[in-house]
Image (cartoon, rainbow, N blue to C red; front, side, top):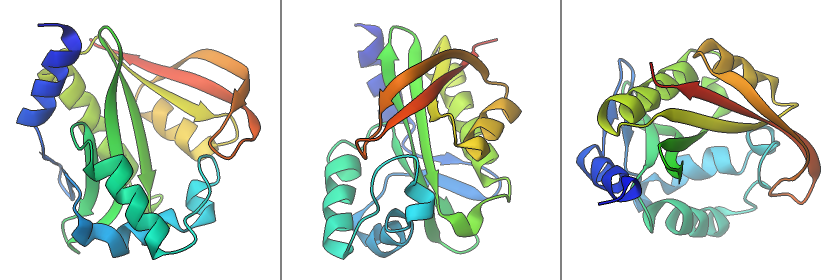
Length: 181
């Protein structure tokens, strides 16, 4: 069995990850309203794709990008409110390396939730999935995400001057990586 197959089995065994305040769990169509709340916000998505114009666009995105291939994709539920406040993912990139991504509703920024999410996904990657490294790609202007990665111990490993983002804009991106200890 190759490494990516082992990762998929690991994801299937770890469908939920609980932190002190959060539950990372598979999303469902019942999350649509909460999902639309942050995926229709241009401030939240300014470094990625265009915000959704309406509930129908959010519904298609939720189904296409999260529900159709749920392994390694997590909704971020705030336990105290039973509310979906974001989403995160781990994806096999190359042998031994997982790519991490995350989006958080701006109402919950600067409260340590991103740190909880990133640390819990790194723990899953290293302790349960035997990853050698976790990698993230971030737009150079996204200072909040860069600060989060650095706070969690990630190191900048690469810079790309000519990346086209999901909006079709040319931007500079950095690659950050956290190696297994």
